[in-house]
Image 1 (cartoon, one colour):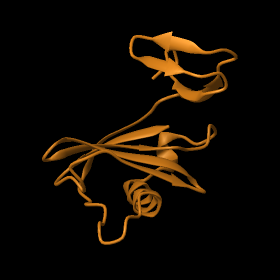
Image 2: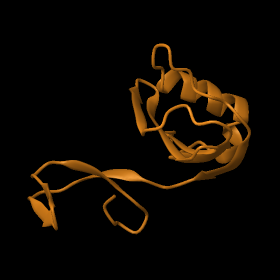
Image 3: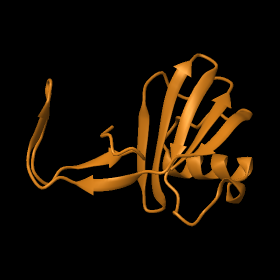
Amino acid sequence: MAGAVGAGAASAERVVLGIHERGCAAHLARTPTITRYYLQMSLTETKEDWSDEHVWHELRTRLAVPDSPVAEGPLVEKRLRGMHNCLWPRPRRGGEIAVESGAISRCGRLGGVE
């Protein structure tokens, strides 16, 4: 998963998630001028494979919403985060969240569920 922080106006005031044949993408406005983006990428790709132009192209493609273009600006940070999907063999419960058997969730490097 590639993460990028963009400076400039946010494209939306809410979280925007995109599921595309080339991978998932996310837009999370942090402040009126800072937005965090995530893009699913191949495990063999590196940060150097993702120029700013390529990041914006993939965000426009994967987050395509009619009449709501992705607001571009300078990318002030780019980094990779190792993530994978995990399959739980039995139900889990934590606080107010219950996950049924077979649910897939994002698992970070340390194995914590996100």
